Length: 144
Image (cartoon, rainbow, N blue to C red; front, side, top):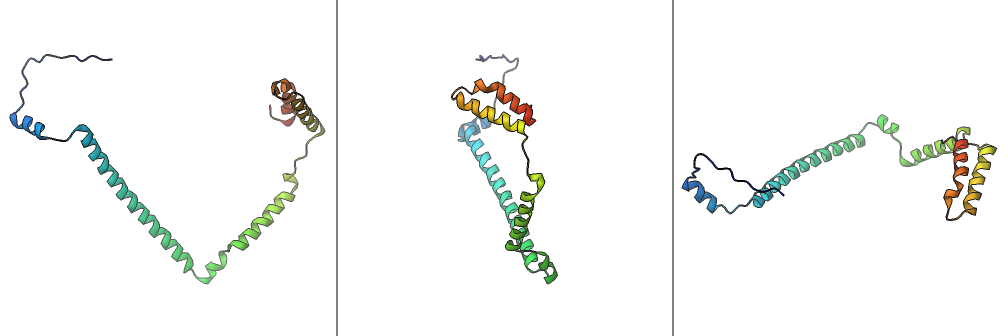
């Protein structure tokens, strides 16, 4: 803990009676002033947030209105949900059937995987006994 020290002044400090009287009459404490200040800041932040929200809402309304009132040629470019879902389904099926999506495991990787699973089944509750099998599997799988 720090101890308070008093430093003597060479000249006496005198306060005017008006200052002392105003300090005596003041009912504000430091906490009260801090609360008022935080309330004022909160009010300003709230006001600015409301302004930003109203600006964003106006921009969104204008965007929606412009899209709804777009000429017929622009509307033909826009697609509805069923058309987009159909396109997404076709893309998904194409990717699912592509050869790149199918990864075949080599026989050595399959054997190492089987060895790890058998070891873990034999050593229930003590998986650290299978450390060597896991390390060999990781090497074969390409994850050193």
